[in-house]
Amino acid sequence: MNKLFTETGFKWLWLTVLFLIIDQVTKQLVVNSFDLYESMNILPFFDLRYVQNPGAAFSFLADQDGWQRWFFTIIAAIASVVFLVWLAKTPKNNALLSIALAFMLSGAVGNLIDRALFGYVIDFLDFHVAGNHWPAFNVADSAIFIGAALMIFDSFKNGDSAKKAEINKTKVDEK
Image (cartoon, rainbow, N blue to C red; front, side):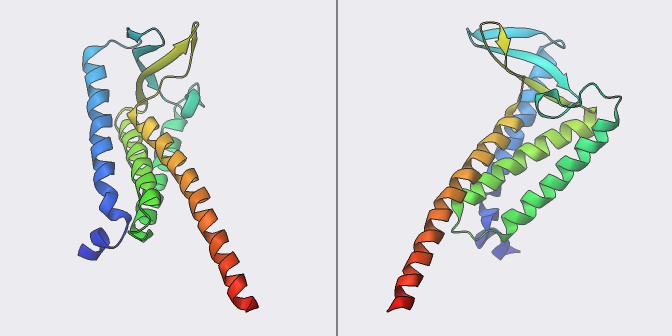
């Protein structure tokens, strides 16, 4: 068990816990401080606005009759298990991928908790320009986005390393 935390990406699991706590605390603060759809302007382009999203990203399938609650709950649970297993199989020296997976795991679990408990995800970060609003989101969504961006960056970084290794191998084979 100790090797799991010292030899794998699990050493970054503290990031998952940290962002999961931040996600759940901020959602609870919004629920306790705002009425549904109430908003507070923070900056000319940013409001805090309490909304409940029974759908997925961009309120996809939000207008359905309730089946989507369990569909998205199951998807989030599967994604959480996949990220957790992937993190456990990632070598400790691949910090960037481990951090990406830790962020994505925190986001998946954060939204899973909301769906399982309430049937919807609590969103509250509302960016807008000239009256056009980006769909509201939360800390868990941000963690998923950051994790995905880091994963893409890692794939380019490791892709370059793999290409260099292949070139070096070819040069050695030619000698």
